Image 1 (cartoon, rainbow, N blue to C red):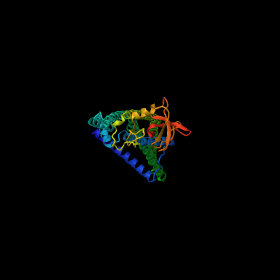
Image 2 (image 1 turned 120 degrees about the vertical axis):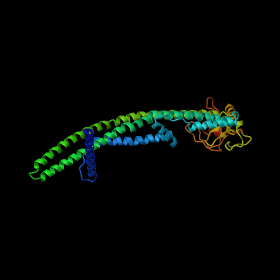
Image 3 (image 1 turned 90 degrees about the vertical axis):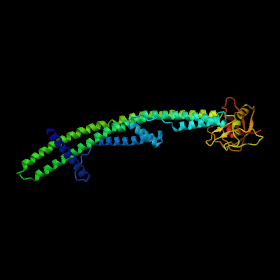
Length: 377
């Protein structure tokens, strides 16, 4: 029975406090009650924390989209995470494409040019898929997890203490309002009732002192938590550096894989090219030795050049005339800009990269890419 009485009294007290706060909040919104303003430093800290939370959520969600573009896969991973279970491993898009290419190349025949190229491309795609998987794992551990921990941990604590501070402020302002009303009533009261009203004033003043003390204490607790946002920024900066480093590693790996693949494709013999393919480069006259006549040009601009033509051109002594097949803009002062259909003089230089020759046009001289030239007799 005593326990029941205690619970009822506590419930009644909580209900009274809730009602008092609701009335105070409503009157403030209507401009009928005064509101205790927080100091400028605390307001700035609250604003900084809210700004940090909003942008951290946006960055975190967009990073998840970047690493996993498939929304269904993201939802599945989220469900498994909430169930505290490991998501099943799935093949990613580069790995799936690589497997298809390898299977197709095997079907067409590894001894054919197309089949061999498909297998090599497929192996490279699978390596890119592995690098992509490593990027996702590293970024999730070193970047996404700390951001999520802030949103679901530190900021939730800040929000809880901020809400408590709001309640303490409403209690303080309600106590101020009651004291103000009590003093006004005392002024209007008769001498007969003054003793009772004076007692009400004393109780209101005591209540005000208690609520003021509780508000000041909660404001200090909230301030200490909010000042930790600067440390959060420093921690997130280190995490951002880790994310950038992971991306650098990933893109460097992809570039190296594709560079190696291009070199492998460039080593295919010219007689593997099919004459009825639409991707074959323009065929010169029969009397000309064409650099690139056996080049297989894909829609992505990849050029596969016949090694036999390169060897003939690089090992020839003296200078030769060559016609320019396509316009070329020099990348730096060591190169020579070219215009389609013009004729220039070319010759090899010992030690120069196999994909380049030295070209001359009047007084101008510079390196020129051999795939842009047609060697003339």
